[in-house]
Structure formats: C-alpha cells, structure tokens
Length: 356
Ligand code: TTP
Ligand code: MG
Image (cartoon, rainbow, N blue to C red; front, top):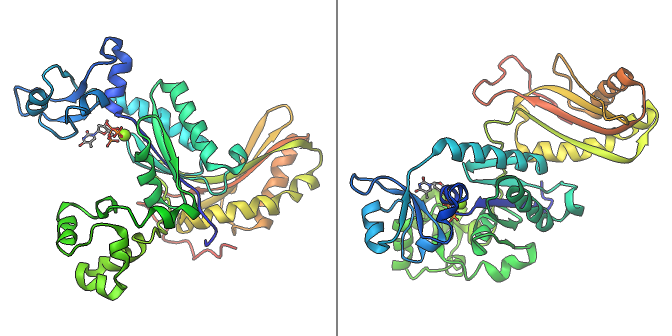
C-alpha cells in the first residue's frame, strides 16, 4: 500500500457544449452555452471557452448570461446524448485502468499504478487515453497525472482545454506551498473566508499549524487538512457502481505451449493482482474467482468457480489448469480475477476471507 501510486484524473472539456458543437458544426467558433430558456428561470449547465471569456459559466441564469454576452447561442440540454458519449469514454477508461471511479458523466479517476500500458508511464497513458477519446467521440479531454486523487484533480485543470499536466512525487514540495486553500477539496466559500480571516491563504500557511491546532480551528476535519496541505491524500480510487469484477491479464510475447508453462505464470500474475485488489478495497465483496485464457488462435475461454475459493496462487492455478484443457493448445494471454457482489447486497453468510 505504501508503493507510489499513479492516478489519472480525466475531465472532458466543456462537455455538454462540446457535444452540441460537434453535432451542430455551424456553432464552431461561436460563444455557446447549454441550458434553460432565458424567458423562464433557466440556468446554464455549461458554456464553451469562447463564452467563458465573457464571464459566462455553469449555474448562471440564462438571462444573466445573455446580458454578459448578447451574441451567446443557447442550446437546450440533450441528456440522452451526453449519457451516450459518457458511456463511450467510460469504456475507454475501463480498457486502460482496472480501477476507475467515475465522478460524473464527464470525469473519472483512474488508478494506473500497476498498468503495463505505455511502458508504465502514466503521462503517456493519459495522452493515449485522451487521443482515443478524441478518436472515438471527436471530443477533447484534459487530464491530470499525480500520485494521488487530490493532486491529479488539480492538475487536470491546469492545461484545460485539451491538455494535461503531470505532478510527479518530486514536484509536490515545490507546487503545494503556493496552492490556494480554495483548491483543497472540502474548502468551500465559507471555510475559505474563515481561513482568510486568519491570514491563511495557501497550503504553506496551513502547514504552520499542528494537527491539534487545525482540529481546534476546523473540527475533526483538521487531521485531513493537515495531510492535504502537504499534498498527502491516501484515499483509494474506489470502484464505480458499474464494476462487477476486478482482474488483470498479461499477453505473452511467445505463446505458452504447456499447462505447466501457464501455471508457472500464476505467481507473477497473482502478485500484480493482489496489489490491485488491496488498493481496490473490495475484499468483502468477492463472490467468485475466475481465469481467462486466450489461445494462440484467439479463441478464448473464461472459467469461474461456482463457490468461493480462497484467493490464492493455488486456487488460480487449479482453475487455470482446467481452463487450459478446454483448448489444450498454445496460450497467448492469461487473466485472473474475481467477480464482485454489488455493494448494496453484502454476502452475509460468507466467512471472513483469508485473502493471501
Ligand atoms: P464540468 O466538468 O464541471 O464542466 P465542463 O466539462 O462543462 O467544463 P470544463 O472544461 O471546465 O471541465 O461539468 C461537466 C458537465 O456537467 C458540464 O458540461 C455540464 C454539467 N454540469 C451541470 O449540468 N451543472 C453544473 O453546475 C456543472 C458545473 C456542470
Ligand atoms: Mg469537464
């Protein structure tokens, strides 16, 4: 758990507006906002970057937006369309990261700590993900790459639109002291004001206080504030409601010719898998174990245990053996994983699992 994590925060650029402009090319280059009728009490969901230059922004009344920017083009909300695009980007996230936490239709945290894509470079992987989003949807996304969620989310804002920024572990000390307190998650207008009244404007100012002092000032939240003001944030990327399994897989450069060769790969796979599992915090939701085998002819098979076995190298090796003999031919890919119960339905009768 102490291993350095790599988190990517991806956020689409002026999402609803971008979808509308893509689908109505005559809107390109114009100031566009998506939202309610200015005659009623309509408010904006978002505005594109041209409109933002005039001070137009989310949650503003359409009437006020038109005052600030009289040539603003207002388009109605097409939620169905945005949900559809959102599904496409989520599919891309799930392709490249085993841990994806969607925050809204247009943004998500991805834990890519153990990803083998792009030679393990989270920065390159973020580029790849953004390029693929564009290729599939013709919409641009921005990304932040950092050792935790707090910093990744801040970083994704820095090169918006259509950019990305990486805060490496060594950059934290340089970057964090100057960070304004308003950027800390949980510091809203009222807390920020309270802080300003005490001459606390930046994380550096917060760093001057002990946990006790912060707790006295800001209640139980002081502890968290102590960490965040130092760029420390251990919150895991937690799985979104949609995920029903957790797995990893490896494609081998040379086909594995025998069952022994395949089984020999399990310990290494298991090592990666158990790291991912402990980060995901889902051990109380495990329903069953499964193994996926892709043979050299690209035919693949998945074998799932009917009952809950211990999550161990031996268990996966046993299932893999059985899966191998379904094809009994050279293997190019092996995956191991667990199926998960939904969060709302904990398995009451399952004894506490001894994971490793
Ligand atoms: P955001 O990601 O906050 O904004 P954005 O994608 O429009 O712009 P940015 O480039 O700064 O990321 O929100 C995503 C979508 O959610 C946004 O396009 C519209 C919708 N939304 C609302 O409906 N109401 C709101 O108050 C906000 C902030 C967003
Ligand atoms: Mg966005």
